[in-house]
Structures are given as C-alpha cells and as structure tokens.
Length: 172
Length: 112
Image 1 (tube, helix red, strand yellow):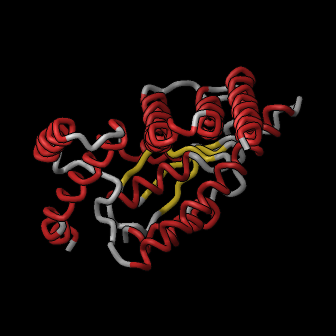
Image 2 (tube, chains in turn green, red):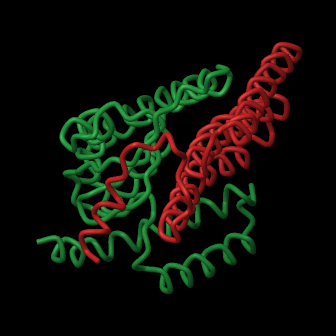
C-alpha cells in the first residue's frame, strides 16, 4: 500500500519540491528580475530531476485544512518543548552535582511515512533530554540524559506521543 | 519606535548568546560524547535562532534571509547531531559510567 502511495504522489512531490526550491531562490535573491527568475527555474528543474526521490518539507504531506492546522499546532508545541529543553539543560549544566542518569531506550512509532518519521526523529533530538540515535523501521533508539523508564511502552508514551499526534495528521 | 526595535533586538541577542554559552559549558561539563551532543544540539538551535531573530529586529531588511538561515538550521542541526551520535555508537565510543541502560547495544548484540 505504501508503495502505491509513493507512485501516486510522485508527480505531486516533484512539483512541490520544484516550488520549494524556487521559493528559496527568490527569497535569497530578493528580486523578481527576469534573468534571476529564469536561472532559478532552470536550476530548480535540474535539481528536481536529479533528486526526485529525496525528501522535501512537503513530501507526503497531506494537503488538507486539518493537516495545516496540525502543522501550526505542531510548531507551537515544538518551540515550547525546545525552550523547555534549553532551560532544563541549563539547570543541569549549572548545578554543581551534574544530576544526570543517561541511557539509551527504545521507543516505537506508529508513523508510516518517511517524512513523518524524519520529523519525529528531529523533534525528539530537540526536546528535553532526548537524542535520537538510530532509526530502524518503527523502532527509534533514543539517548536520554535522565532515564525515567526503561520499559518500551512507557518510554514511548513519554517521548514520542506528544509529537506523534500532530505528525500523524500531517503525514500519516 | 526605532529605539524599541533596537532594545528588543539587543535583548534577544543577549539571550541567544547566554544559551550558546550554557551550551559551551555543557560541552565541557558533560561526562561523555552522547551527553555532550545533547548539550550541543539543543542550545545551539535555540541560541542561534534567538540571535537570528535579534538580528532581524536590528536590521529588518535582512529578515527574509535570516528566516531562511533559521529554517536550514532547524533541519540540519538535529540531523547532524543524530548522525554523529549514531556513528559514535557504531564505532564503540565509551559511554560514561553513569549510563545504566543501552537498548541499542543489546539489540545489536542479538543480531550478531
């Protein structure tokens, strides 16, 4: 089923990749002059043809209003977690006893899409005390500064669930 | 108005620099490579983002490009930390004595 989806979305993904690249080019250039626009189009096309199987931000994104709302909520949640992560780390670093209890735990994700998993792994890395180490299918190995539970189910609930609920709507 | 922008920008720059400093302190104080990466990945992301936002307040005409830099940072920073950590684990970098569980090594052991 997953393979079919990939074929179905192939052209859409290429178009989205092309549009993203062109947008980046325009933002960098800050002008809409004809020559720079043409160069941008040609280069974006070449990159799109060469790297069509690569991932871009909207690869496998579901273009529904619900997904966009989830995307915005996801970013709010993400920045909240990022700030929390920094303060927690600051407390650890500044306290003389260095209260850490590190370990590598294993968690499971329900996300099926490649981009969803990538975003999840990245989010885990940037949230309090966790660092993604290895992705293997549905298993993610996470290094924690403070291990609270070595049980897979419990660790999954603590580390993954917050992001997963949003990413599930966005990417599936 | 002008001075308000300047003050906000300066405050953001100082906040960002503080987080970056704490990250550097973390790099020195943490016991092993994995914990150091943890310190590095998080603080550099938020610290640099705050510095970029501060710069955008000081120079509003740069904000589009600063936004781009921020986006690249958000995507590449966690990825590179993750790949470094994975590589370190694969070649068997020593973990600190405080590490009490390593599911990844256990699972790899099963396969060998």
